[in-house]
Image (cartoon, rainbow, N blue to C red):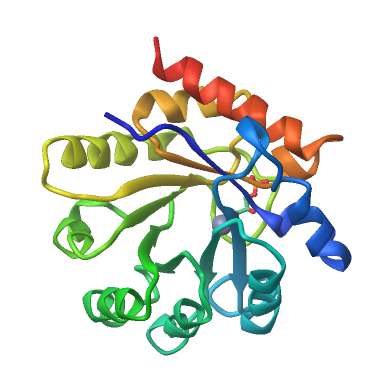
Length: 228
Ligand code: DX5
Ligand code: ZN
């Protein structure tokens, strides 16, 4: 059984000149409160876009008590990812396509006090990494090509979600299944039915007039899909 739905707004679609206020907007109470805030770190090499890095994450950690979910779309995460864990990020996710030694990296992230997350791009198969995932706390299934917000959901990745769900439900893996890319009120239901635990949403939250209401609405849609 999937976890009670977790909603993780991505600040990639927020106003970068006012990130503190944007995070506060989803840090209220009840269903409108984000479970995690998703922070997309891009280096202009692993993906063709450049965003923010560790100094900004450190400032956000001082600003909010909402757990930060750092999604590192960078080369050489073996070198850079543990710094985010040491800084206090709740979950640090690295891409399997970029990691040299993902098992050692997971150990380092956990030793630094964070949950360890492994991300896979839409065309990366899950089956090759099941053993590796035994060392991880979260699996991030990308449902768009990483790099930009506001892209369309790729439904084919749900086969990987179903496989991961089965592996967790049968006790072969112990992790949360997270999905990232193109999640909105239309697409969240199919992801929830496939067995996602944690839903990242950027444009669907920060493109809405009221981000907090958008969080609550997404949560409601995910719950409703689960209970069918
Ligand atoms: C894309 C990022 C996503 C992005 C999602 O590379 O990893 O987290 O913010 O944005 P939406 O929800 O707009 O697809
Ligand atoms: Zn992301």
